[in-house]
Length: 283
Image (cartoon, rainbow, N blue to C red; front, side, top):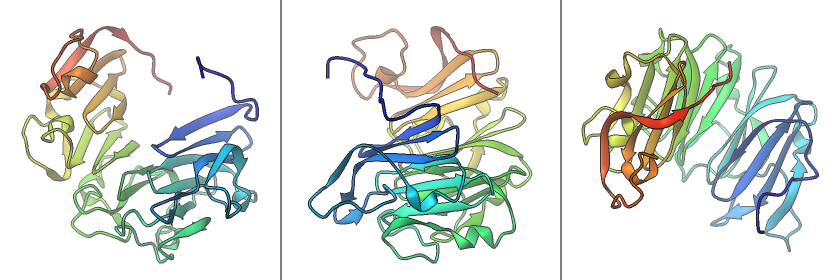
């Protein structure tokens, strides 16, 4: 393909998501569409439907009919599983078990979406989800975060089943992010917290030290910034303030700091403004 092309089968899309093996889109009617690989290493990849045994890939967007009775408002993709949240506040899981790290009372390999009853039993309404390689986060409308899976990335010492991330219990979180083995949360006050294991040397966590962070910790170097949004990656992190300034930390070559020939592995330890860039974030 020489350049971008419109996906004709999708219209009035409100949100999108992608990982290494599949993609997803939610339209303005709350319908979820997915496409990509059907399985990874013999486990369902998280498309939400079964394919013909002779097919290993869904080439065009296909609706997840198992959620046709629900209005999907958010979706998160990991390399081996998918999370979806509905307007009723329920969270659904489908795909593999996150390399054995996830356990929601479901089978370890779910082709079709199944509700995570452990979250339903909390009595809370969930509004957003995030998925890492082997952990997951779910955000309630009150701003509480639940995490499960990889111990370092889920925000508490227990793993596998969803637990309240107590370090953020009073923070009123509005955004959650997950990637590989670390996580990020932004509060209504504009504070940003990160935790887990980042790469390289954990400097994309923003704490200025080459150490893992087992529980959520505020990025103090950005305490003067009212954070509006973030984007996290395996090598670097970008943070947008309400004033439109974008800050970056992690591997220099990926940060857009104007050094085209920056050698791989050169690290920006402290959050640094990206020159000549201003963004407008959505409310």
